[in-house]
Amino acid sequence: DSGVTQTPKHLITATGQRVTLRCSPRSGDLSVYWYQQSLDQGLQFLIQYYNGEERAKGNILERFSAQQFPDLHSELNLSSLELGDSALYFCASSVGPSVSGTTGELFFGEGSRLTVL
Amino acid sequence: DQQVKQNSPSLSVQEGRISILNCDYTNSMFDYFLWYKKYPAEGPTFLISISSIKDKNEDGRFTVFLNKSAKHLSLHIVPSQPGDSAVYFCAASGGFQKLVFGTGTRLLVSP
Image (cartoon, rainbow over all chains, first blue to last red; front, side, top):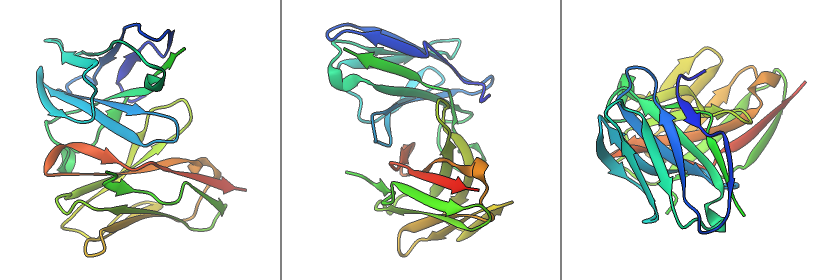
């Protein structure tokens, strides 16, 4: 158990719809990262928040947005869903704002599997 | 633009032998490298890391080697055990505040 909680574990929805994925980081971690893993693909970095502020942005589509709340949990909003958005979405957390040294480990949740039909 | 590449999608090894997983990177700004292991239906878990100031880091059966001039790192597992069967992701960071992952190598250790 990494201490990172993601809900829901599975989600099936239709094209054009909107969903929200939720993540609670490990206790004490201030950074939250979102990653997307499509079939046979590596983990694609979407976005990072640190203590409520956006820290880094990766290959996140304009249809997707995220935020980190004062209690440090984070939500990833996916809208106007397309078939190609079907993927595993992982949330990870870490203590500090950057990935290096002793604070470099990311602790991952079990992921939210999104299926768009 | 795949900055971290794992060119072997899969690897099969017999129990007790050495497993060598390889990873290449293109971004010379990367200064910290990690390996993650992922079992089915679970999130990736951190395995071992190495800073660019080192060329080797060892933790029990796991050793990571870094060759900066070749922009190459490898993970050695000795001896391999059936419980090591998983997908292994190489990851790198530096320059930007994010972790870039490779596509993973599926390791199968047979008894």
